[in-house]
Structures are given as structure tokens and as C-alpha cells.
Image 1 (tube, one colour):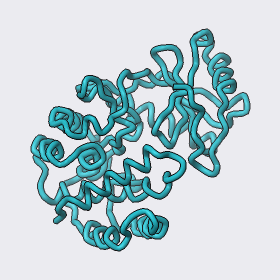
Image 2 (cartoon, one colour):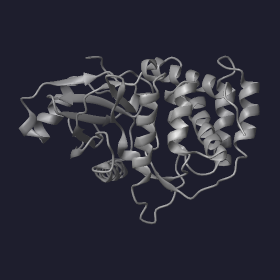
Image 3 (cartoon, one colour):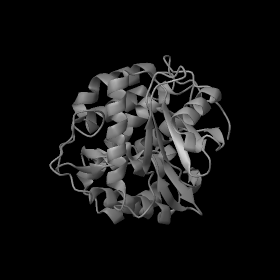
Image 4 (cartoon, one colour):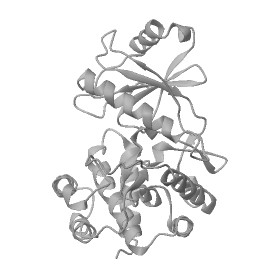
Length: 303
């Protein structure tokens, strides 16, 4: 696909194909003769460009200080390497990090390209696909924490830390969902206690990061967020990706306790609430993911 990056953020950087081609040709001349094409993506953090048939370049969409941004890309590359050899499905391998130039003010990265199509509702009713996702989560949990614990950023710690964000989500979603019902559910979910220590998590198992071929899991994208966190965090995939019967197959495969299962539901709810209003006009696929996830959660029992 050849669409330019959709404008999703008020401060989003412009990134014409000519700039991307120039950055690649100047900094990595070994690829200068390869075709470069933008990829239509559900992603909200990076613009994605394919380089030839085996590589992909990722350009952050929102401005950051170059130094910390470079550190973040190096952290993502380290995390991506940790995945290698630990999972039964392919994950992107880090290849290179580029520097700001040609009017683009940020460092950027190059990874290997993975074949497959983004997960759609076609696999949401598949027990086999559900078990594939469960197997992947087991693989990720097998990666040693090496003493790491949740770093306090994003999802994966304590639910009450997200109260201010959820209040904002409820305020902005009044015309989109039944806010009263959602608020009541959050009050219940946020009180769920922790049961198990941190394990390694992918951290963002939404449809846009999940690739399928022939109805089965074929690859996982955006692996740079690998981190220690609540074991329930990657259970968000049960509500983002699966309908009821496959969700139960997923749960059986992971042998989740009732409490862990409900905490996964809580993390999926927190994420979906943001998707529904923030991307209502700028990213229809992400908005739809949020709506589907909320519908599945509201139709499911909670502790």
C-alpha cells in the first residue's frame, strides 16, 4: 500500500517519501537502489516504510529530544534482540539506527520485514489462533527478568495510577459509549489486587501488532516494549483479538486464575477507553478496536 502517514496527532511530523528515500540513500548507501514505499499501518507511534523486500524503516511521528529518542531506539533494539530464539513465531530483528537529516529531526530505525497480514475479525473465532497467542505469551514469560521489575511507565503496574487518565477518557467519550456503565466497571476493576510477581510482557498485543497467515499466528510486531510487568498485562489480547469461545480456549491454555483473568480484562479496558475517543476521526481501525474490546469486556463477567 502506498498511503502517506495519516495525521493522528496535533504535533505529528511531516514525512514525505522524498525525505525518507534521501535519508536511506545517504545513511545506508547499500540500500539506495532498493524501492522504498510507505506502508498503511494501524500503528500510532511510527510511520512505516518498506525497503526492498526484506527491510522496514520506522520513523517516530511525534517530536522528541534527539538524545532521549536515540536512547529509546537503542532500548527497543536491545529488547528486540531478547526476543530472538525465545518464541515460536518470528519477531522483527533490529538492523540499524539512522540519524536526523534532510529536515527530519529525529533518529529512526531499520528492522527486518515480516510477512503476514494484520489480524482481523476473521481469526477472532479461531481456537487455533487463540492457542497460538497463548503459546506466544508463554514464550515471552519464559524470558528471564534478570531482576527487572515494572518501571512505572504505562500499563503494567497499579490500576489507581491510571485514574486521572480514565477520568479524561470518560469525559471525552460521553457521546461514544455508555460512560456511566463504563465508570462503574472501572471502579470495580481498579480495586483488583495483585496476585503474582512481575514477568516479561510484550506489552501491546493489539490487532495491528499481530500477523497471521492461513488463519494462524505468523509473527508479532512492535517488540521493543518488552519489559517486566504484571503477568496479566498481555492478557489484553484475549479481549482485543478474540470472541468468547476462543477466549476460553486461550484462558485454558494459559491456566489463568480468576483474579489474573480479571486483571487482564482491566488492562484491556484501560487501553480500549483511550482508543475509542482519541482515534475516532484519525484512525478508524484503532477506534474500531477500542469499541470491539469494550463491547467484549462489558459482555463478560468480572470478579
